[in-house]
Image (cartoon, rainbow, N blue to C red; front, side, top):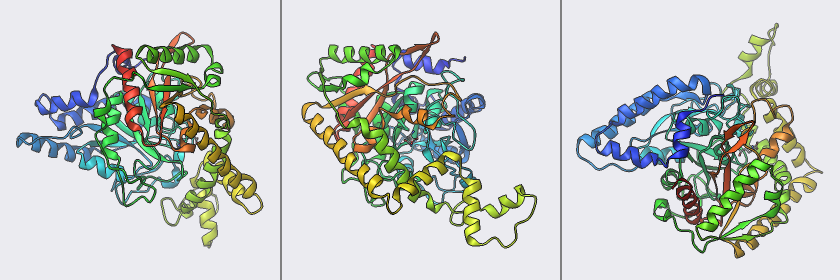
Length: 502
Ligand code: GLN
């Protein structure tokens, strides 16, 4: 066991990372270049154990930092994110930088353009340290399904950091990055945030442009921040949100400064809880969430029991809709348009040289050698569910149940402003513990998937630690808010955080 001191420091004291560093830059206590160098030194030291980074973008980072230093030297004012170093999940494109999405099939793929969120962060002056590890094409809950090896949880190296944005969460929790971007299709930002003791925010579907994010399931995917605290998440969200012409599903709502809503005041806010979600928990996680509820009561929020009768179908509905969209989205990885082409690979692994491989064989071999087992499983499930004769029984029916779940939320939000649940049923599990049984792994997302199914914003915030075999481990709680009500979501999350650390 190895407990990272950065993590403990952050948990015990309310360090406001971005603002603190911003002041240091403004007061010339540190230069942006020195700050970036410092983070690269931390990465060099810690990432041998963690394997959070897949690619470092040192040249880009230092060029960005130099620009910030020039501005400061010229006496110009700098924005809150200028010079602040962070990491980008490897399924988000950064122009000229390798983007594998954790897959062998994209081993040699160099992104030709910046994702919308990357453009926004570059414009805000944030410094990009590198690309971070993930389950292949964001399919998984542990980051063990990366073609580039598992990432470890910085709190306990024998445990998984969660997934699929495990590299993002591990980088932030270990102090290898101030902020990180993740993607969340069924919980991939919130679940790793919960496992690593950091904050993870999935915005409302449509709040953040998905342009330049490698699509997993397009009706569920959202990009969001993983940070040390709620204020930092609010700052990053302010930078990456807003309408985008490059994403047809992006909402017509302008970016704004979300930090103005962090008042610490939740008096009178109505927070819904679902009794079965709490009763079904093991002892430790139950104690943790009950303590969170007590804190909110003390802060003057009104706790109300609510019912979400159809939400129990969210997981099965997800495992129909998601693979269907996956099977369609991943059809583009064929060895011709992107990345690895199997001809070279096949020649190197077979003891005969296949002659005259035709187009179809090239497609098949590229996918056979380039894609991992979990990805293939989902492509097959999705293709089956969409095939003629089965479409009505599976996909169409799942979409109908999705509507029923959405109606559950509409009804609930007529009575309450927010819904509070655990983020995960348990703290981080051990590496290898759930790899044998995919269904076991899928259950790790039981509380997070619903927010993607209905599209509401949701955040995971570190709650009281949970002891497992005598070791205190992080355990997050989740808040969900109404569609586009990131204001109350962040306000409520932040109020707990400052009450908890006061
Ligand atoms: N763990 C879930 C899955 O495996 C969610 C993944 C995600 O949110 N990208 O599909």
